[in-house]
Image 1 (cartoon, rainbow, N blue to C red):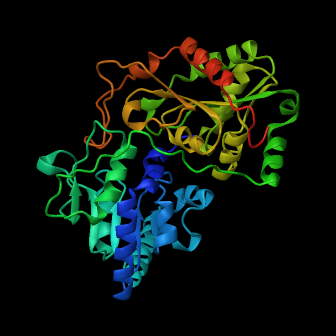
Image 2 (tube, rainbow, N blue to C red; image 1 turned 90 degrees about the vertical axis):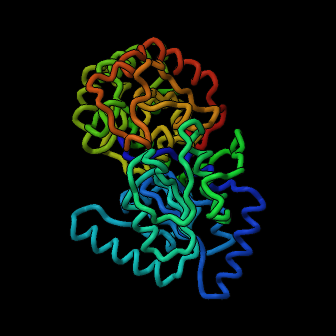
Length: 399
């Protein structure tokens, strides 16, 4: 499943701000509510950047994202559904209408603070400003170190490309109550180890439905391995050669006779995934690409034993389930973007030209030949999957 989102790990870390920040923000919220201002806006175009769950208990938290990405917020049940504002990108007219509607509602709510969880997006910076929030926290490209996004933030932080993104987002949360005049110098040290993300638990009927979609072969198999070939045209530099997925599937079926292989993906990836299944040529290998909703994909993750994917949305959504994940990195580095969970294994060749895309270059690269992904062999991935299956949880949400 290809996705334009960034990491779920970036978002869940924000739930764990320090006790002092939580108490201070609660006190600030009590003061501002008495003056007619209400809560904090958490702004992200990514479904994975969930707002802090403690804010839903301590103040009137709002979240802002694109309409196609809100499913992750609904699945996490962190922010009340009525507090999630979305923007549609279906067409220009719908986009403009939903932006104006969201800004109008935010200004009526008199939001006290906006935390921009985008790197250097001009759009999120502008909308944070238009929200009317008095505290606006985000990354700022000092001395041109990143795409220009104006001077619309009141609390401007330096983006540190040497810290995992989840820790950088924690710093944004902590900076809400910092003295803006003292920034960007900021003495907050984010913890190395973060608590685990929330766990997605599907309903019994959802699990039964997915078992039916997996077909009769699933009832005969004791292991479920998912392959996210990411066959779309979105960020093709991150794609592992499709032929290697065919070879990997064949070798997995041979090495694990009781395993079922399922290719996942979006509607645009369905033809390529069906072609891969045909090349594998086994009744134990099927494609569900384009046949599941995003919520059903999460249900599938709770049923699976292992997932192989490149650095894309599913690699991070899977952190909500007990599935073991093997993530293939190339043009981006796992030291910044890998899900910080023991269930994730990151494979990265570490070539001199990699990583070549970052927040600073707006995720653009002159590369036209992703040698960094081609350098990851089928043998390496096969070994990682074998290790993942050995360490899989003995009890899963669904089997």
